[in-house]
Image 1 (cartoon, helix red, strand yellow):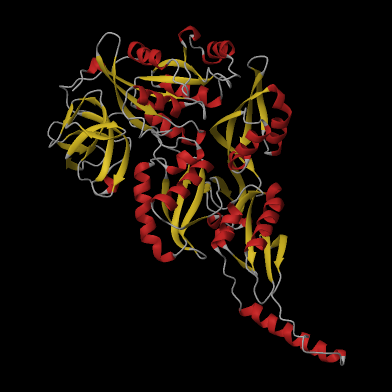
Image 2 (spheres, helix red, strand yellow):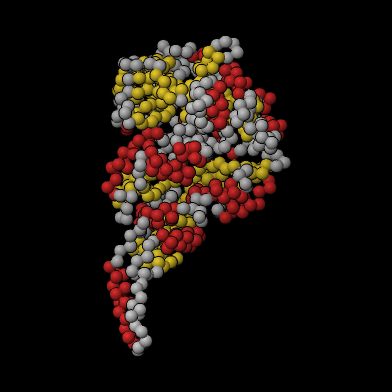
Length: 602
């Protein structure tokens, strides 16, 4: 095993799309962990969805051997992290298992919102930060300007910033040397009792749970008995090793190492990300501080398309939770859709990713209900406020004294050219500007207080399109503020469909109801009778669309003759349709649920 002084644990942090995964690719190629024939871009992104969207969703670890200029063989443990605001929890976990961070700044775009928030996260954990300016080969690169931003916005020494082009591999050798020289080795005692932090897991259908660990003290060997400190579950280590793209068995891990263990864990619930692993015979005195509790901000229910698949969905959710610790869920049921789960997500992209992973990795056909946030409702007859995130649980209008909704502090950094458009967008989303700072001649930082529910839907997409991709956005949930809340019910043929109900701001209720009714009209197949689709608040209908009936031409057999004959046939048809409407049931196709959830007019 490598001595502790020859180990370096570091992560790559940056705003979305600044080249983290590409830089990780170059580091791996330089270390010859993979030959050119088997190499593919975004090599650490092992999900199809990550490759298709060009984003990182999961933090991935890899051990890179490196011989430095002093002739010593070093072991560099790299963790590649996501950049999107929805996956900042993944970043916080990666930071917890490292001593240093490469802070990547795009030479064409400069310091952006997530660059700042990720740097503060790294500083909280006392990480050594090495600024790296990437994309220096681009025509639009402004290296001197970016250096000034690093000094002014981040307060880091720009002289020590490394210049690299991750795409072309320029400056990567100097980066290796800087990692060895500037990032401190881990401080750990191999002879102390075992203390290791679980920072991730994944499920292998043949070998059970594969636990990803960072060892702080002690030694972990094959055959050793270990204990999880949160629930005192004891297991025997079958194998231990490190990540070199594939799992490479080494038989043991020592203090300062990042690696994995397999211990025949079949009970998925025993393993928790953030838990401390220690020796069963010689336990450590106290557990390591875990990660901060994850706070979901978007809530939605998941139901299987076929209610018989509920057990399969439950098992898939357990395995997914193992690999995505930020997913929170509990059992739920609906009159229209049967049994399912009420889930909490970190944002709308997180919800989309979970939906795609359930469909691709676990072969589940699922329906998601409209996303909602958690509202605080004050009742007339109760002293304590109640928290409601599900429209089904919303109390009767007459019993509600008032409602409050969560607000966020949104930080938007944008080139000054797009200022007017972005201000209009924020006003439309009920935002109140609290601060505006010119970072330099070209860039402005705006701080807004705005309701979280307004940001959920199409805010991020519209911000990007209005600013041609240059504006960046980051937010923190702050507190609750009073709002005018209404429960919007969708009625089909006069019957409410609970899975389509939404909690909305009263001022936006008409627009939302109209859009939902229009989308349902296009999706619901025509029946033998007219189907009214209505949006209602309480007993007041605020929007309506109608799916016209299929009708048989009963007059086809009448050639000329008296008009009363035709009238009689039409009246007879009308009576039949009225009877049919009373007993007719409208089946909602899955596409109708999905159409309601689409936020953009596609």
